Length: 214
Image 1 (tube, helix red, strand yellow):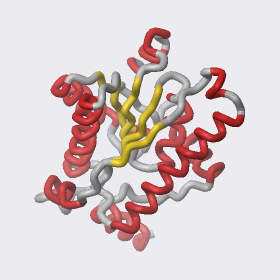
Image 2 (cartoon, one colour):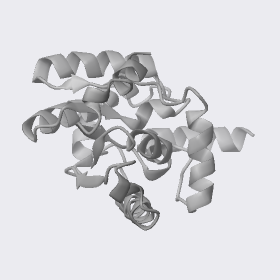
Image 3 (cartoon, helix red, strand yellow):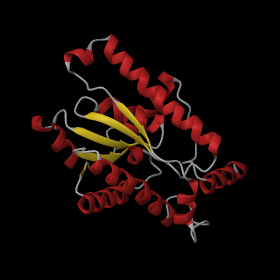
Image 4 (cartoon, one colour):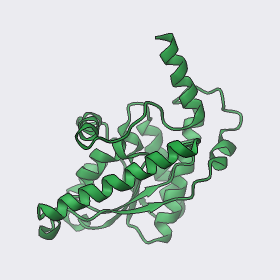
């Protein structure tokens, strides 16, 4: 896999990675894995989370998780020894209207359809633009860790936007090599808040229908 080849290059170690994150649980495995290779800044940009209270819960959980694993790395000496890099955080603009704009005409799409593609593109575009502006070497997203997310689409979008905006995309499918399983175990270990829908009102309604049908 292309990402593994990049990680094996010692010349890339310590370069700056702009990591779009959808939530703390999905970021858990990705951060614990990639912080050995990159100086990561987590970019929390998710206007698709269309309920304000839900958004606030998720963004605070993301920030708290980063604080905790940074502190653990300081306490066990792995930061001082250079075994891992400290993780930073940037919160993007929270404007749900941006999501509703791109979702027009796709309100009835099933999760995983065209609406999701447009949502991936919206979030990755913001990451590419800001990542390039702030001088990052790479950008990528935690989204591919979810079995519900299309890694092929994400990589195609990321490569295209990286080329458009002059920043290298780190191709990934974090669900592989038990990545998703590890994220669940880490979420339990850290007691992370997690939901069973991606965040938008449409996915929430779809999940509620599925629950009732069961």
